[in-house]
Length: 212
Image (cartoon, rainbow, N blue to C red; front, side):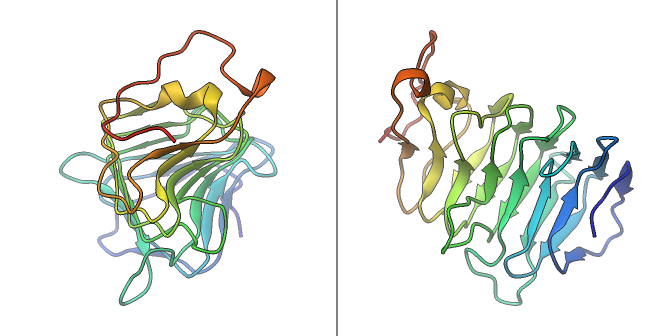
């Protein structure tokens, strides 16, 4: 059921509906490209992810006038309808999301945010809106989980807050993004001592919400 070779999902004028989990990975490190203007709807508890078992990547680059939408396949959507966009340890550096909106994901009964980054620091996420999650907007699983860039984005109406992150990677959070309008308006910083703490020069930016 996975994408194991390079492929492009073109904008068809109708949505793609993911009935079950869809993974992008394979021995060749496939890249799935999603065209601007595409809508992807996800069924209940469905995850769309890359790099879990083998290398793989997703490139979803919209435009300001033709964004890409990831949303619920429920007639009356609610926060937590679907699971997450998962970026796992095999996610390749071709992975990027720009001018995308993510909404109604983030399961309320699990730890995953609407965007779930686990054991990887190679993806880019810019000019995106992450909203209406039943969990965090973005959940970074551990100290090995971060992004190359995170700029000019909006995290709002997320149940547990905009971001859950570990101390070594907090500096990736840019003041060009907004973090307000969530049930909890704060960046949650998990505990970290020794090598799990901040061991190199870093700047924690003024984000307009507190770090907790």
